Amino acid sequence: MFQELLDNLTNVGVFTSSVQEWVSTLSINKVIIFIMMIFMIVGAIDKIRGNKLGYGEQFDEGFNAMGPLAAAMAGVVAAAPVLAIILKPIIVPIYTLLGADPSMFATTLLACDMGGYPLAMQMAGSEAVGNFSGLILGTMMGPTIVFTIPVALS
Image (cartoon, rainbow, N blue to C red; front, side, top):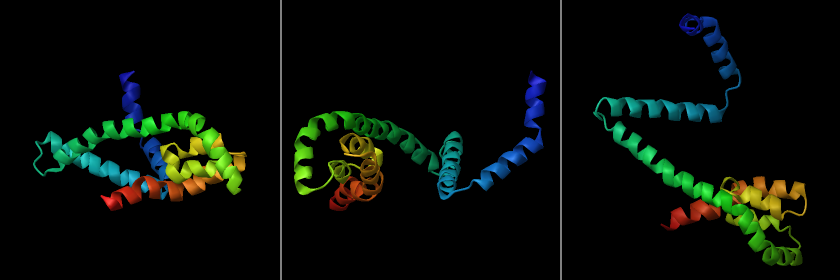
């Protein structure tokens, strides 16, 4: 079993084909994540070496920020179905009166990755409009209201 592991680790062909596959499907998203991983490794190495360059402290701050950020984001995403139940009786008549689909309301307040998309899909009159408001409007209007304006005002 150990010999099999060593054989697989020393098999250069597997590594080469993996790198070729990774390069052939390279996107800007993968490049950004790769750069972030490099800096994370630099921070971890500096932390192991006793924080000589100061990157280890930033590495700790990044890990300490993950918990509160994940809790807040998961909370908003989990609240989307409850918001749909509470807001549907109020928002649907108003938006119908205005001639708009109620799903537009969801992503004017929430970004698509913060629960706006599931909320838009639950409030949508049709799947196409739900996808449009949840994905297109939610990537433009939602982050502006949820992030840019509060950060600019602070």
